Length: 129
Image (cartoon, rainbow, N blue to C red; front, side, top):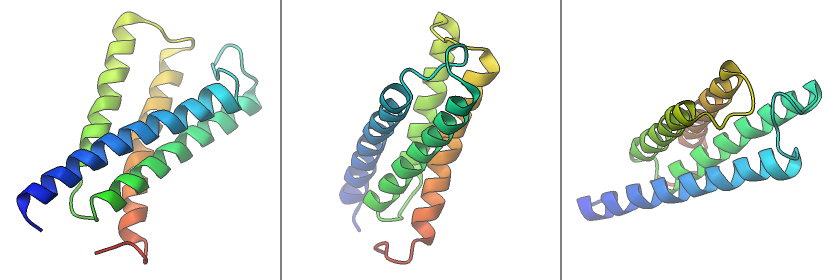
């Protein structure tokens, strides 16, 4: 694979993986669990919502790895940097609706899910080489 193709696939995997992460987390957080927040949601909704956000991140990491053809980890690194930047920006501007530890845990589970999705796609037996 030449370098132009590798760069193109890395950029596409980053964009599509980031957009799919945003789509799946929006569906999980806002539609399925009706604005999931620490203060307004029940404990059952918090557990199920957190699990659905983690699953959303796993799917986004899986999709990114299949696009980049198991070649590199740069899309996952850039998506993780985006999540850290979003978390830092949100910490400065204070738009969170819950305690810092809860929101930080949700964002760290997104990062872990992205990398777990990558690991799952690398070990996936039908993935292209």
